[in-house]
Length: 339
Length: 159
Ligand code: SF4
Ligand code: SF4
Ligand code: SF4
Image (cartoon, rainbow over all chains, first blue to last red; front, top):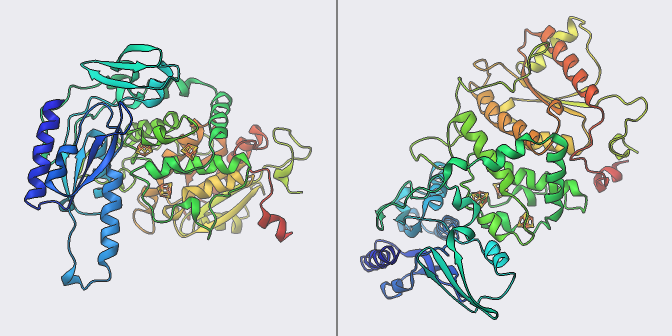
């Protein structure tokens, strides 16, 4: 990991010095122990701030979209010949790269607007899992020591295996190395345990509709509609989200549980073939809503029905952009027989 | 008091399924027309909404209909390969395959939502579909999930 970090800093320095990029979005050490936070660097000197470790959680594709669309807006008032391109460099792990592919499939910007610094990923630490392991005690000091976390709290020193606190989406991540990159920092990471990727969904599908509804109702009842899940999601970049449209008003803002259910259902449904299971929405949710249980189903369906995964292939239309005569249609009703 | 203000889950006396059918102009709506002019009988439980093409149907229409208290939602368009806009129904098929599966996943009854194809010459099939869907929904009883129980201010104001 140190090697990757070193290479990353060198590469970032080079790109900035040669003015190949205007800004690089990456991670720096957070202000609290065992955290990392997004950083935007514009000069070669700052490149040494960059880190790459098991605390780099954010899906930075979100910022790439934000930066490029804000830049494009600012160029609108210029004459076409005076417009400049802004190139955004981005530290990219597997899920981030898939989000970038989705942006490209959806024509949000061009490939040359980005410089992709690929990093091999072995998963990030789930803060909530870690907090639970520590019984809510504050982390005074912490360091990563191979496959273990060494942590100092008020009650003493603790060693926690990294694997026990990795985020669920990381543990079963199928694509942990970037699917596209301009330069790769170090060797690709070994695969994660993706065979059990849909285990949670398969279990849930076995429940009766009533049990599933009860779970959905219970989870949605936690949601306070802060929309943090949407704000963190790289695929949620709409200028005006349906949730805020007023003509028509797609979803009400009353206290009626069905308004929240409809909001969540549609927010999630918009992720068909667009959710890369980066876990950003889950990690930012202040109420601990089990969004992944539902989002993963969309991922599974997309693969089962259309043999495709979100953001997996750049030279292929996104699942819901594609039109095919030979799709499965078991769900189509035929009167007097079958479904 | 509108139908969906009634306490959820209780089969009310004299309840009749309320089904929203969203159909495309070129095939299924014409099919419904044909059923009509051929005087084929079918249950009067459907309210038909005509749209240019199934590809134009926002999946939110289905959710909105359920939220507003529809007991069932039917979507029907041209058979694949026969779309007036060439591929609108192929887009729709992908959307609805995933939409229906996702609705079922959160616990909605399978029979609440129905997707099918009815062409302009299939008046008989249209009647069969409506019959079949009405029976399915009747067997399920009144819808209880996703329904908005607080009345929309706009609905109240319109009364
Ligand atoms: S972040 Fe959590 S609480 Fe906020 S809107 Fe999303 S699901 Fe609801
Ligand atoms: S829905 Fe959540 S897990 Fe999926 S891409 Fe968006 S933020 Fe990532
Ligand atoms: S929920 Fe849907 S409409 Fe809203 S920002 Fe996300 S993709 Fe766009």
